[in-house]
Structures are given as C-alpha cells and as structure tokens.
Amino acid sequence: MLDWLINWVILTFSITLTAYFLPFITITGDTTPDRVMIAFAAGLLLGLFNSLVRPLIKILSLPINILTLGLFNIIINAGMLWIVDQIIKGLEIKGFSGYIWSALLISFINMIISKIVFFRGKV
Image (cartoon, rainbow, N blue to C red; front, side):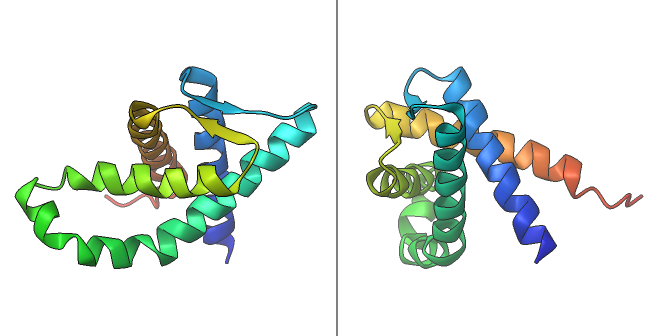
C-alpha cells in the first residue's frame, strides 16, 4: 500500500515537472492549491489507468508492438494521457505531438525517480 502511495506521488511530481518544462501541457487553476489538487487527481487517474487499462491494451496491441519493436508503447502512453486529459478539466494538453512529448517526459521522469526512490541497495 505504501509503495502505491509513493508511486502516486512520483507520478504527480512527474506530471507537474512536465507541465513546468513543456509548453504543450498546462495545469490550470485559480490558486496554487487548486493546481496541486488537479495534479494529484491527474496522477491518481493516470496511475489507475496505467495499472488497470494499459495491460489489456498492451496485450491487444501485441502484434503491432512487435512490428514496431516496442515503439507503439509511446502511442499507448499518449493514449492513456489523452484519456486523463479528457476527464480532468484542469489538465490541458495541446496537439498530438503534445501528447507524445508529454508521455515521453512523464515516463522518463517517473522511471528515473522510481529507480532512485525504490533502490534497495542490491549489489
């Protein structure tokens, strides 16, 4: 349970950092607490979609994923981000390339921070 909570915070931080660096993605809100709540809601929803819906989509898209040598995973990540963008009204991503670049940066930041946080000291 604690690992899931830490993953949620890391994903929220990744979304916030991506919104800071990329012009494609913005988190709108009147005040800073509103923007933080929108980021946490987006992180929660993206985490739920990544854990519940994404495995099914990856199985269904396995043939095209094999043909593209795994690059179709970027499109799947962008699709998950598009779904979250449609549901969360304070999260705005502009254009198809915005979804692709945002998904890439969110995945990269999430991977790096998760490796740092969950490092178990294995030799």
